Length: 458
Image 1 (tube, rainbow, N blue to C red):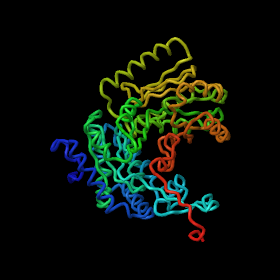
Image 2: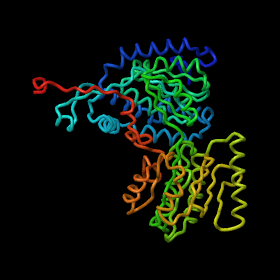
Image 3: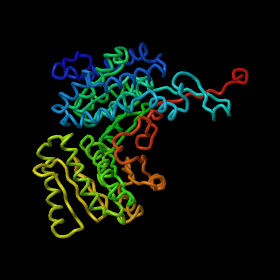
Image 4: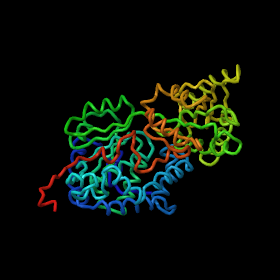
């Protein structure tokens, strides 16, 4: 697919990115925003974004076809993994989901269009309007398209021009997203820029940050700390650091009737995006005392991951990453050989998937790439104690709980988990979810409150 050179990342190898080029690009973005984006209504933007997402779900869409054809080579993800991931990603961008997001985070569906009142504000004879940044700079991390897509949607809803800085070699999917939007809405596409360069280039980052009203960044905690030092008020800095997730299977689901379904849904969460996202489970806690033991769940999970490998193979790993899995497997093979407290299931002849069962409930950080722990626990209290060392890093808890679902969700909420969802949907958050427990749209906006005189209020 030959894409036109609309974005800086299209010019890789043909032109060097310099601070001057970045500054000029930002000035152009802000000018285009004033002309093409600032005056759009929320309803109009929602219709456009929903149509764009619906187009990505169409198998005949050339951008989707290119993502599936060239994506395995450029991103490393298999076609099956990309196909499932894109379906889940764009399936959440619906008119209903977009309207719910605006109403949830801002209190009124037209809050970005005019001074409006929610019911509580009416009681106090007050109105308010929210406005987004003039220029929103995004520092992306990794190859997953989900963060870029979500950021793009949020930025357009807030009428913000957007500059996406991608790490070297990771702009393939962001470029397809931007080009596809530009094809159906050229003027909106002109409010977006995509560029890539190696992180830590201070002259380039300073040129970008000096033009931005808000900087949104994802990455390691060390990366965020380094970036934060270079973003100065009044520019807003929003950092999303390293997060972990885990699952919990209640004893009521450990029966011959429910075991297969629980394991299959958990395997979907492990396999999605090859377990590389913050929503990917590192550990699956399984309660003892059910009709089937936690070991049976681990064995069934291994079979489910093997089935996933047939339909959506895991990416081929660089030798270093494969060696880490092999070394960790060898460690658990030795432990499994000396007692039943540890058991191991793994893909024969490859590192495609690994399941380690342990009776030791302590939280273990996985080496990812479909390497998951199953831990036996007596009850919820033991789980919370075992996971407490990573409590402030947890992003999502996936539940298979039956009749106790509400009670367990309440307990995890009190403990501090930002999101609790059914197993099988950990990697499919709704559009309106509160990322890291924060209002995604609400974080971007600034407010104007209006307290009218009685004559204006009548």
